[in-house]
Length: 250
Image 1 (spheres, helix red, strand yellow):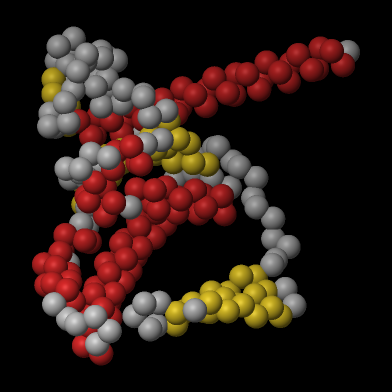
Image 2: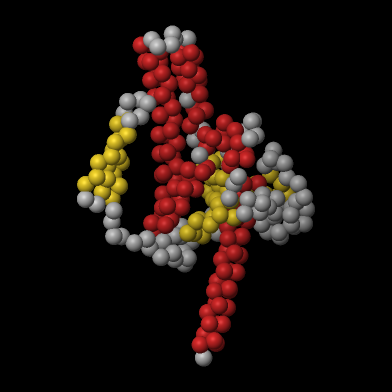
């Protein structure tokens, strides 16, 4: 059930969920402009994962954020209620009630995930001006049946979207590094690149400089460094263009 009512410069959308809860979404039309992007500030690199939700590096310290595994925590309860639903007669009131109980568990899982993603994205955006992530092929990764459920549960895509719009509100910038960038298998100390690095290899030592790496911590450092390199190239090009335009004007 959806309805919309317009009043001057805002609209209200009423939504009814499968659990019979009602939510009012207010959309306001304001004259407030999006701030200009300012790149002077802290830059943080983020490596998204499954064991840990993400590992971040801001140039001075590395932080790990535990994967809340929202679906896994409610899996037994959900399976029990789904089995109860399957045993109910179609069209009966008891089946309708059982369906509501299943929907309630799904809603609790979704709300828990959204709460975690909002709070973490807000913390990262408040503390940094530029946030760098890998442009992951999430749809392709879900094709791996062994990881599909865990990837769907973790909410990487939603998290990146949250980072993006919150950064825009403060004049920050979200940078997505190419998904083929070898962040995990490149030594952040000497830039030696391993030829192969299977997913189960969580730690490794560079044969060139002897630095021992946690796979994900190393990746977050490389992601941040790659963004700084790209921004330096961009700033150099802009400076070149400005000088060229200045010479033509003389």
